[in-house]
Every structure is written in C-alpha cells, then in structure tokens.
Amino acid sequence: MLPLFALITIQTSFDGGSLGRIEKVSEVHFRLGAKGDVDQDKRNRQANWYYFRVDGAKLGTKLTLDMVDLPGEYNYKPNRGAIQKETPPVISYDNERWKHLETFTYDADEPKLRLEVTPAAARFWIAHVAPYTNAHLDRLRQRARRSRAFREEKIGKSVQGRDLFVWTIEPSGPARKTIWLMFRQHSWESGSSYAGEGAVLELLENESLRRGVRWKIFPFCDPDGVARGNVRFNVHGYDLNRNWDVEDPVKMPEIAAQRNAIRKWLEQGNKIDLFYSLHNTETGEYLEGPPGKEHATLAERFFAALISKTSFHPSRRLTFSTASTTEGMRGRMNVAQGLYNDWKLPAFLMEQRISFNEKLKRLPLPEDRIRFGRELVAAIRKAVE
Image 1 (cartoon, one colour):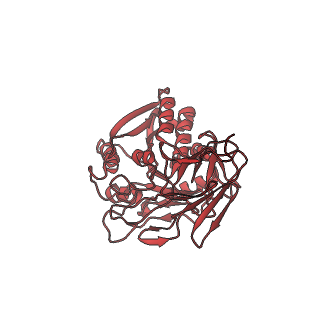
Image 2: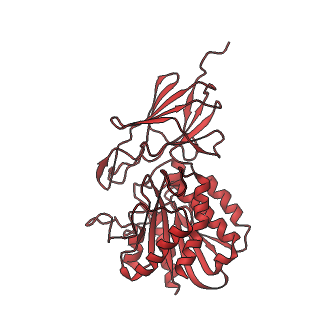
Image 3: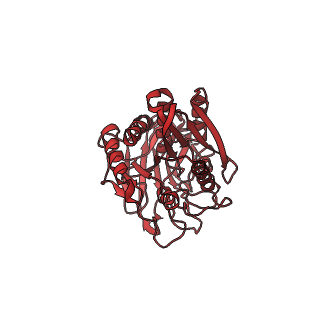
C-alpha cells in the first residue's frame, strides 16, 4: 500500500528557477524563501522573483506554501518587499499555460505570502509572474528568421558568454524613421519579453507598420540573469538599467555592447526618432520621458497614443526624467537618462504593473502582454508620424 503522502520535492534546477531556503514544516506545509539579488556593494536587495516546481503532490490534498524572506531595499531605502497581496503568483500544470492562484493570504507583520494549493496533478509550477526564458526567445528567433524583413546581428556576449543581439526589422520602401526598442533589462520582468514578442510578431505580420520605418530591437538584455533566476543585477552585481553612465566591458559587457551598437549606428550618420525601454513593476504604471524638454511634444503624443491604443493605464501623469536616479552617485543613470546625457536622444522608459489592471479588469497574463506588444508598435508609429 502506498503511504498517504508520497515524498514531495520542490525543484528549481531549470532555466529561470529560483528559491532561497526551503523549510519543511510538515508533509503538506513548506516555508520557501525568496532568494533575492543584491548589487555590487551587497546593497539594494531585490526579492521580486521566485519560480519553482512541486513534484509528488497528492491530488486533492491541500498544500500550504509560505513565501518568506521578502523584505529588501530599493534605492538604498529598506522596504517590506515586492511580493505582497496585490501580486498573487501564477500556477501551471504544463509550464506553458499560466493562471493566477486564487487561494492566498498576505501577512504584513512577518511578512509572508501564504499560498494554498489543492493540486490537480502531482506536478505543477509556481512563479511570481509567468516566466519567459532563453528557450522562449529561441523559439521566437526561429519564427522571426522565416521573414525576409528580419535581420539579426550579434553585438557581444554577456558575462557568462551568452550572445547578445540587436534585431532589425527592415522597412518596406525607403526608411524615413528609425525606432529602437529594448526589452528585458531586468531578468525578473518577463512581461517585458512577452510584450517584445508581440511587438516583433506584429511588425513581421503587418507591413503597414514597416512602411517607411526601420525598427531596431534589443530583445533580451540579461540572458544570464534569466537563466540563473535572478532579479535585477548581472553576474557582477551591476544593474543593467541603472549604470548607463558607465561603460565597463568587463563588469558590464551587456551595457557596453548595447551602447556600442547605438554609438555605431549614430556615427554612421543615422538617427533615432524614438527609443523605448519597457519594464515591469508591482503596482505602478507610467511613462517617463527624457530629461530634455525639446522632446516634450513627442512625449505628449506618445503618452496619448499609449492611452488610446493600448491597455496602458497610468498610475500618474507623464513625467520627465531627472539627470540621474540617485543624484550625486556615478553609475546611477537609467537607459533613458544615459542616452539623453550622451546623445540627446528622445529615449523613454515605461513601467507596466503586474497587479490588477483597470482596463483589462483582471490581473495580466502572457496573452495580455503579447497583445500589448502588438498595440505598442502601432502607438509608437502614430507618435512619430
């Protein structure tokens, strides 16, 4: 006779998998620590990511999984952590189709997020948000390569030797405008990659969006972090969005490769009519324009187009970036600030919430992000016309 409970195991040994400590309270109760991620100074701990698999669960028997070790630090200020009641996890039984877990409670005192799962299969996956791994990107690459409009250029390698790319989607007819898109500067922000996939597919399928416009794309800025299940920093602890005023090809080869690709493009006499980097955050959603007010008209058009054409639901009005995210500290410019500082480019940074979206009337899932990516390129096209 089989025992009432088979041995339940919790695994993270796969692309993007991440947990800290695993404590077994009982056969059906585990405390799971968020591994977190710290910068080069061992500061600014970020615990925005977990992704694990449960094996050996008994069908119909409730499991209690407590997510703990949540507090961290952001911009050198302590916080209670990004994992809260507004950010329930997603669950999947095939590691492809995801839905939000509905049975959970948040204890702000510890803090902890208690998940209660009555499994429909012996194996299932849980994550902070639906993962988008290096394997997902490879599938998109293979699909995109079938189009004659698509070109790929290797621009360098990450710290751990993974290829870094810039993709070009060529215009139909002479190019009057050039737009650059950037996705996945932070490894936990998988919604950015789903939106990037939607954008690429829409551009390849919809010739009207390519008419007179060349699109340049950084599809995956932190492949190492994605593979290792990290949150925000590269192998050496550098933030790939917060160190754009430093060019160090050893400690930050990812930024160095991207900066070099942009520099090369500009030195060849080309222009950039709009640069856009997409991020995810927990509850905020906003567009931040470049510091220089000479791009204010473009920023207003872009903000209006996002609201009218996409699921973008801003939590604040259009804002314009300051000179640095942390005044007085070297290496604290984000990509929009760095590109304006060096080349006066009209560079925008957008944050997209993972919590409830009033336009969608639900928590967003991968299909919503893909749809947003398709809508996004139409909004950008309208803004630059």
